[in-house]
Amino acid sequence: MRETRRGFLRAGVAASAVLGFAGCTGRPGGSGDDGPGGTPSDDSGAVDAVGLETVAEGFTTPIDFADPPGEHRYVADQAGRIEVLDADATFLDVTGRMVDVGGYDERGLLGMAFHPDYPEAPRVYVRYSAPPRPGTPDGYSHTFVLSEFRVRSGGLGVEPGSERTLLEIPEPQANHNAGAIVFGPDGYLYIAVGDGGGAGDRGRGHVEDWYDGVAGGNGQDVTENLLGSVLRIDVDDRGGEKPYGIPDDNPLVGREGLDEQYAWGLRNPWGMSFYGGDLIVADVGQNTYEEVNVVEKGENYGWNVREGPGCFDADSCPTTDPDGGELRDPVVAYPHSGPEPSGVAVVGGHVYDGDAVPGLRDQYVFGDWHARGTLFVAEPREGTRWFVSDVDASPASSLRNLISVGRDREGELYVLTSERAEVSGSTGAVRRIVPA
Image (cartoon, rainbow, N blue to C red; front, side):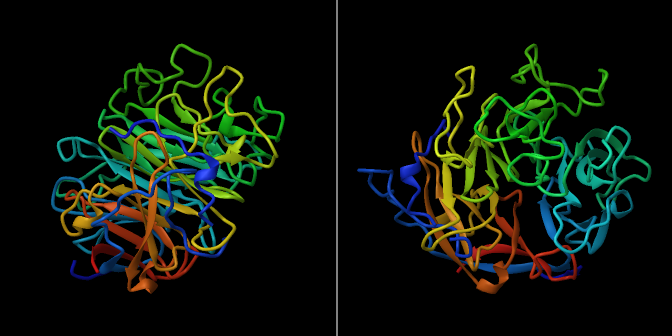
């Protein structure tokens, strides 16, 4: 790595309100009204372009960014290392613990989160793809591993031999691994888990759910595995049978289902962040829609009964589960087909609360893997979908293959990109969003 200078409420979205989005190879983004008879959002004062200032480059596939209290910032590289951004040092290397990655691959080092009381609690939590471990069925791709490491004084590395494995999940396929892990304002750790891979939430490692209209799937199951969900655990509770605790108010505690479950019905959640008490999760779609959800405890986000605001692989489908629970619609959705703008794989972001670009203030900034020179800006709104516009980024070539959006302690945002759509080479870079 070469160092350079460096209260949303429940909201729904109707299918008719997103049909102005579109294309399998175009740009994501777009704007529109509230639906039939609606009025476009007043976005006066919003920016229509931003600049991208290079902070560091020479990564393979930079996938996560952290700026905990202290002197250093960190970048996780999917190839297996966490680098200290402003010291040109390797903080943690898990390549020897991982599966071999290379070419197009959704496995690897996928997420990191420092303890919310860091540095008083000098611990970092890391998510990576390990070879199949005991308990992983034959024929499965790998094992999802969530581990804790103790951080050395000074923050330049971890204590040797300090890894403590918290969670292992068998992964049947190599794709749909999600990876984001974030601490919420409640101090608990939230873990995004994909549906197990393949396509359509069906096949090896995918259970049958309650809906007979399509085969599968893990997204609608809360009893047999932890796939297709957001989980919530207490990393400070070590007194039980598991190496973590279960918050007493997790929705399935005392009910049928796995206690770690927080919300479900997700396909491949890629990007997860908090703003206030609200958890915003982007979820990569399959054939039709990309979506962003405001995720609430105990709620069901529809996969694989629904994809985005519509049915998946069926002409009609229910909007509730057999118990009458609502299948929640996203607050943002844009399709894969039709006229531009469009996208193929949503990349979640953050609500901007920095000072460098006032026109982005209080807007959710995110993008798409094939962003083609633009970012998305969504205006959170109560009781309806979020108004979305696209923002040109300069230089546009710097936004090729958007992988992640990071945030520092001052609320400034960073885009993590690579010129290669695979885990190889050294074209990965971190760039700060600045005024155009």
